[in-house]
Amino acid sequence: MAAEKIVQASGLLGWVDRRFPLISLYKTHLSEYYAPKNFNFWYFFGSLAMVVLVLQIVTGIFLVMHYKPDASLNAAGIPVAFASVEYIMREVPFGWLIRYMHSTGASAFFVVVFLHMFRGLMYGSYREPRELIWIFGCLIFLVLMAEAFFGYLLPWGQMSFWGAQVIVNLFAAIPLIGPDLAVWVRGDFVVGDATLNRFFAFHVIALPLVLVGLVAAHIIALHEVGSNNPDGVEIKAKKDANGIPLDGIPFHPYYTVHDIVGFAGFAFIFAAVVFFAPELGGYFLEYNNFIPADPLVTPPHIAPVWYFTPYYSMLRAVTDVFTWVFVAAALLGAYGFWRFKPGSLVAFAGVGGMLVLAILFRLLEAKFWGVAVMGGAVIIMFFLPWLDKSPVKSIRYRPSWQKWLYGIFVVNFFVLGYLGVLPPSPIGQIVSQIGTVYYFAFFMLMPVWTPLGEFRAVPERVVFQPH
Image (cartoon, rainbow, N blue to C red; front, top):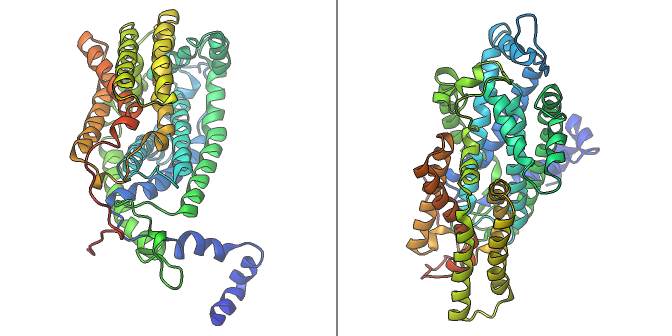
């Protein structure tokens, strides 16, 4: 130990370490951070999210060197912003590669984050003592959505322009402050040069700073309480004489090497998309976005990028029929209150709340409720640590029928996403309404269904088989 201290205190590294806690940070977050030894492939996606974040920042820096946030027309009658993107694609050495890496990286970011969040949902990574980690993660998701939305306008293509027009106009549906808020977001009465410049500022400076700060907070909170695992067993409960968890292994070198496997697989898929299908059939880059923005020509069908479409489906699903959904929910809650007599003020308030929502739904326009539902679909996830009342964390030890509920939730999310891409239709609207009700019922009824059924006994130690 003394020799180790001498090595650490000598040379340039020692000089730095006496002025900055470099070695202690390395030990705290890598070599002496003990993670459960039973991580599976689902735990690749946390580190992959970090990789994609770095990729987006680096490629974004190179794009900013040549991009011009200017909505005015050049001598050829093409918006300068659109022309600068074309210049990057055609004239800048490897500009096409940097642009496609950035656009593909945006979609890859959401793929990785969705899978990372689903892993947390499956294994109960939001449960005590990790509530704050989950809240930071949900905040990261919200900021990431804002970052993607602001960046989507920058190419100044047809879908960029009209997509921003539709989304910004949704703010106008908020009672009292809506119209003024929409003008403030646009910076003008119409989407134009002021909108482009402020979206550019948010996308390049403001939101990346917030995002990096939240990621740092997310990691610090994680390393303070420790990582969850597929069994939901707290490894800090059983330690050896040196205070090291019996079921823990140092994150470095074991999981830094382990994650290289995940990175290699991701790199193959990412490279295949970038080099052979950067538009991915119009899901990653819409065909209309290769046409310069024209305020006088509306595309036949306006839809957001694929990672927004599940929430866009929920927005479009909201019609007057939801009045009766709220009434039915209130009646169902009242029956449960009378039948099971829970004696809970929360249950009583829930029944009253449904009736109030039914009344308000008749007083306020459906457009506002569509926005509220779309926002609520994200906000409700913040409350997940307190909605889940299951006696076990991991899905491994829950009843089989609960696993089916999780499976239907995933399928439902995919269906909503697909319907959000398609033009509105009567059948699609009905399916979207059913899917929206299921999405919210899955979370809101968690206090009711999560404690039900026969649960398997959770082992005292993690279940691990070397491979």
